[in-house]
Amino acid sequence: MASLRDIRKHISSIKSIKQITYAMKMVAVARIKKAQNSMLSARPFAIKMDSVIADLYSEMQEADFKKSSVHDLFENENDAKSVGLVLITSDKGLCGSFNANLIKKTLGFIRANKDKKIYFISVGKKGRDFVRRIKRIDLEFYYEMFGIFPKVGYIHSNLVSENVIKMYREKKLSRVVFIYNEFKSMIQQNLVEQEFLPLEKHILSRAAGASGISDFDFEPGKMRLMENLIPRHISSHIYRILLESQAAELSARMNAMESASKNAAEIIDELTLKMNKTRQAMITTELNEIVSGASALES
Image (cartoon, rainbow, N blue to C red; front, side, top):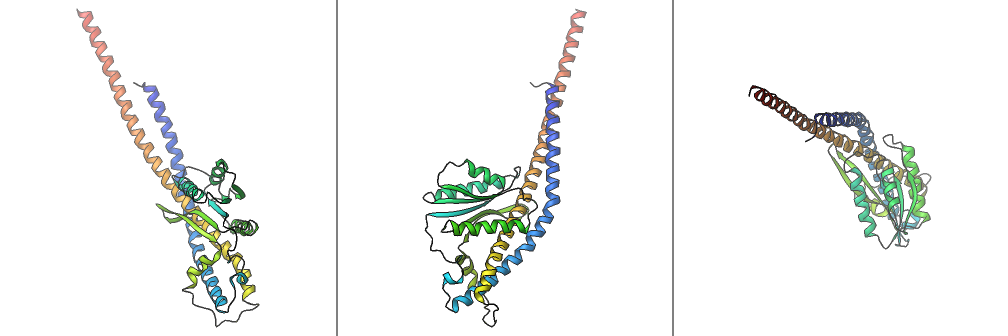
């Protein structure tokens, strides 16, 4: 049986851990409102950019523009032997299954593309460290970014966007896929695997319901407009994805730390009960020894 001193020491350690987990929970709570507001503000802009690109794409298709002449990011004539993967994780742990689910999804992607060369872009230290541990000659790091959470800015999405486009063109990839967590609610995150490039499938899914802009005159022209809009379109979506991941991470950390604090409180209660029982047993033993000693003296 553990001594009273050991039990008290254990209780003290758990109380210290509880203070840390509670503090981390409160930090996440303080940050998540701002992260949610940023994310909710970015969503409508990204959706509107989809609509504008879809309308313009439909108009250009009706005008008999070839896919290759619309923009090179719409065509997919590259060799299917190489793909790109953009993995977005957190920089730190202690956020429940947030990173574990992403890594599991990434492993599934790697197995499904075992006959292809995979080029990685990693956002977040956890993803970078995971990919570096994989021993495969057909995996290659292209670009990494970390230390941006929880202060994601549009400059970060521009950097990621530039490298995604550069990787797609330079390595002649058949496609580029994003894997990330999307914020659903304070208690739920959606794990997303989204094909990002080429843009054709992404845009055509929205072009069917496009309102059309055939009544507009374009200056300096449709081609020039498309060339200027595509980088902004990609950057705005990556910005939204980074904000989604940031909000999802904070909510996951808040829930994980709340659960850890509750578990710590339960352990403290159990240890306190154990300490009281041990102390009571010691008192009972001492009383028995006193009574036995007194009886021996009387006899």
